[in-house]
Length: 328
Image 1 (cartoon, rainbow, N blue to C red):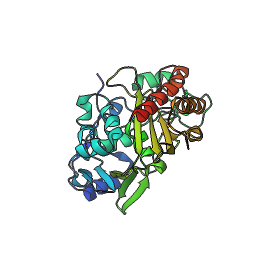
Image 2: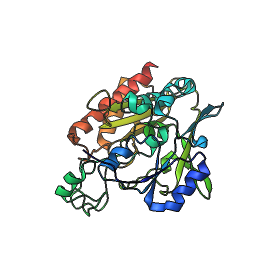
Image 3: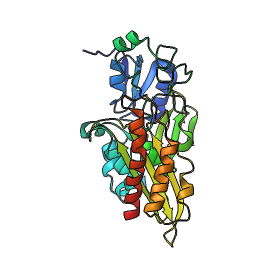
Image 4: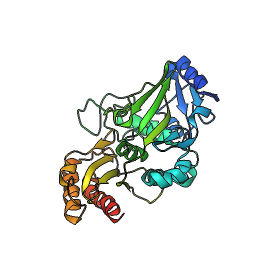
């Protein structure tokens, strides 16, 4: 049986109280929302905080509100709330779809969108029991000094495995980040870093309070695709979001592709827009984009599935996403 270590559990009701607790206890404290990823990691000894600061009752982190320009989602809103909210379904259904594909229904009812954005990176050599990791000699991300994925590597390449960030990235979402000194806005494209140990550009005593998503221009469509071993529960082997804007003549005027589960952060794929811009989204353009995405994406062996097969599936996912947009 995997047991939890002793810790103190705090349940603040206000944001200031939560931020104060995180600041006072420093590196010995961690925030917890739904806990669907953190608690299993604690059982594996990957995190051993002496203090957990619960966010489920922090009122400033709840609520979904929309106006003509944007939708604001509290970071403590559950994935089920995001997947079923009428305004999100009507205005940004791709985000509802991504939230709906996270894990299974039981975990979506407690897991939060803020937790999904801040999900810890995963790796075949990291997300194991302490006994397993000790037998291997540990790894760069936890207790060791070498990377088993990239031999001789000096930087962790554990995989970013969240589903909502690719959609949020192509939608130009902005994160409201708070600490004891106040709140600042961080565009999601600047939120993630390439360091698999801590792939967020915020401090450990800071919190993502809310997510603001601007209304896409008319004629814009976004599609999300996810690859996983089973149709429920599993983390992605790869996922991607595509944004396509078209002018009055039906030609592509805006094109973005973000892929994830390749490395430590969701990555904008370059050069794919060259095949699409100024053209109608027909079979030839879709195939050219899919081929360019295949050339640009190179999965690592940080997930226990053949990386070459995962790479071969990237153009398949691109075709599915673009055909969905073309049909719309």
